[in-house]
Amino acid sequence: MKKTKKGEELETTDDESSDTVEIIESDSEESVISIDSDNDDSKILDFVQVDDSIPKFVSQVDILRILSSKETFSHILVLLGLLVTFAFLSFTNSTIAEKLIISLGYGFSIGYFLIANLSRFESLNEMIRKVDASSVFLPAIISGVFSLFIWLGIHNESYGEDLHFYLSFGLILIFVIWQFAQAWWMRIPFKEFSLRRMDKYQDEGETKLGILLNFASPIIWALLGFLIFKVISNKITKFAENFDDVFIFSWFLMMLILGIGTFFLLKQMHREFWYNPKVASFSAYFSIGYWGFLSYHAGVLLYSMHNDPSFTYDLVFMIITIFLVIYSLSFQALRTEARRAHLKSTNHYMGKAGNFITKENVIFYAISFTLAYGASNFFLANFDTSSIGGIRGVSQISHMIVLVSGILVILIVNYNLLTGRGLIQEGFIESMRNPKDN
Image (cartoon, rainbow, N blue to C red; front, side, top):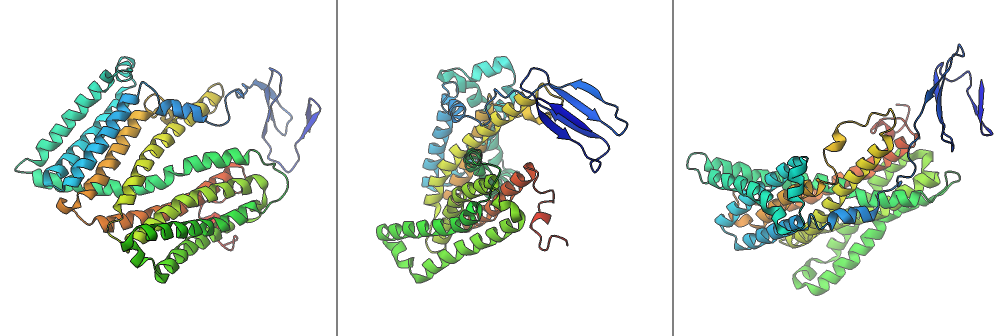
């Protein structure tokens, strides 16, 4: 059986399934779905075209509008003000400072999470999105009430000590779990950049770009890391004593082991599809960017094994991470809304979870999450009086978690690309098995 439309011929063969669905897109206003079967029965259904006027990629301008909006600027100031307060309290190394960080960290995190959910009500949303400072009044009151309850709870004679212990352990757990989330969220800017680059390549032809850059990226970042370590050794006398041949060998060995292991698994997953220009370009550009993030954590991990503390560099990166999370959540919210806009006129099921985080409330969720993370960082910085100490050990473990999670993220991102383009159908683990027929 054959169908033709506008000079293009579509064929179905006897090898195909008995029932096939063909979606024929047209530049005209009329589009149809033709459903064919063995008995040649067919019926024509109305098909609503996807709106191609909607941008293919999320605009950076749209994200900047969320981050720099006058309506949310006061809330960003609250976030920065609380982080500065946590930093000041942590430097005092006092028991009162520790309890204040716990109370304010949990209180404002819970408060802004509640505000993010309540912002669905139009009147309340207008109240917390005013362009003046009055927009923070309600969040401050709600967060202050939660903080007060926590403060009174950890000072209760009967259960205060146990509550303090569990809340302290909770902040350490948040700090460790955040490393998984950090590795996952960090993929977004690199993935978006890689998708834009991939869009400029053709489907046809072959290239070794993916193989070369996936193999070379860890080596390139290892060399850059070596140069950075050398600069640090010239500035910090204490580190210069540790920057010896053993340190240098450990650095390159760590990066090579991580790089070779990841490359082998990617090679197993991609197989011959790695030569496809689009697949190769995406994998290459994502690799060169994301390995920069992994090399940072590998470098701080190695540095912390020879110097105490390494937390100064962690605190600097904490600020970067916090704004990255706000960026990533904003991107996810906009992408979800764009996808729903594409599909709203079709019969595709869009799910109900898409309305959970929107561009209207994403900033409040981001503040909630990052306040909990910031509190956990500065709580550990105040470790001398913490009921659960060991900032150096926790920091090293967290960097190890990021490295393992990061390698997993590289594999998942590449796997999603291959399955999304219909190149492989195996499960995630099966795609990396060798031989394939086991």
